[in-house]
Length: 161
Image (cartoon, rainbow, N blue to C red; front, side, top):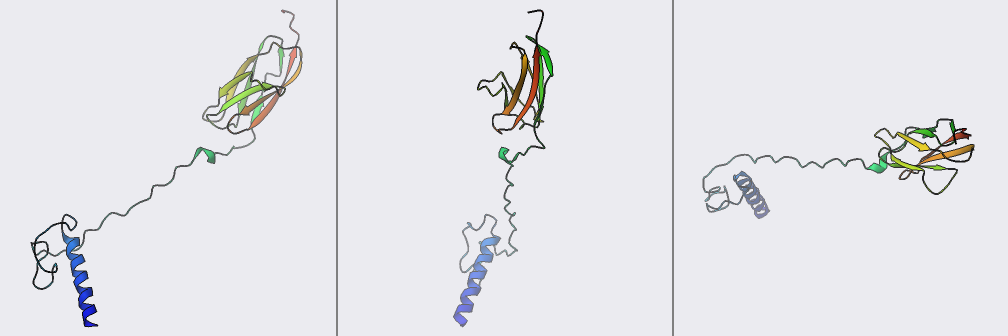
């Protein structure tokens, strides 16, 4: 039992001596057991408390773009009624900020226009409507979020054409 206690005391003294060395314990010099009888610590005989090391911190993860959630349903407004061949402005909101938003008519596969939404998820698209007079449904769709909003436009005859 005495041997175990002496061994534990020698290890504790050695660890204390290594912690006290200014270069983290790589100094050479001195003989003996690092502060035990018959030796010195680091060749200079100094004894002091171990230097505290700064705590390691784990950086907080940044939120990924996939954590975005809409603030409400997307909306799309139109000019309402437009004469054949004239422009109509479509304004949308609550799309994912920075995503491409396409405008299509009556479920067609090609886009009449594509625009990137602003930092608030808003768009404003102006489209020329040279289509047969009638009522049409236009859909704005966010390409990455899949969010959609619709608006109707009535195209009337234009006597100038």
